[in-house]
Image 1 (cartoon, rainbow, N blue to C red):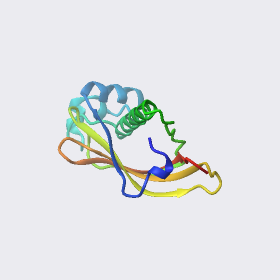
Image 2 (cartoon, rainbow, N blue to C red):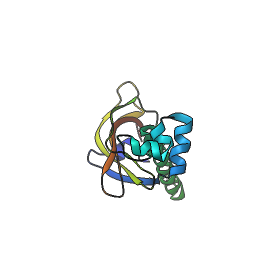
Image 3 (cartoon, one colour):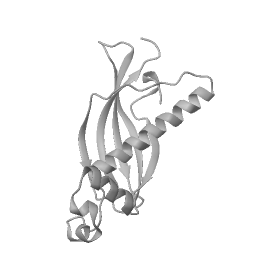
Image 4 (tube, rainbow, N blue to C red):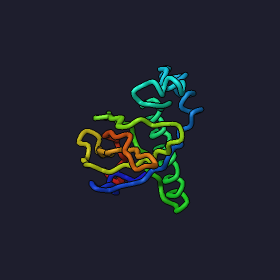
Length: 158
């Protein structure tokens, strides 16, 4: 991941994708969101979704998995060049989480982020705050997820 100074409004990054299967949809649902339409194809078909659909929380958890994998890849590449990788800090929150379309077994969701804004932290000069707009798009080009997140990013110099 980049340092605060490397991120500019308008920056875009494709971070990876996740394949939703009937098995991983049901496994996630059994543990975290045991509603019938996430557990059973027949119940899913009878629901408003029209088929076995992933929990929105599963779609978000997959985003997190892909995001961490992208951070790790970027840090490894940075270290291989002999540079010190940036390690993002915590997020003070998310806004406007939207599950826009159902995610079904067989869907592949590609995740990306865009930088909306940046600002230096006055109370923590070693950090900056970056507002990201995050999206997930299925293989049909349909946006299935969107939300804004603010993340503390380390500064190269305070």
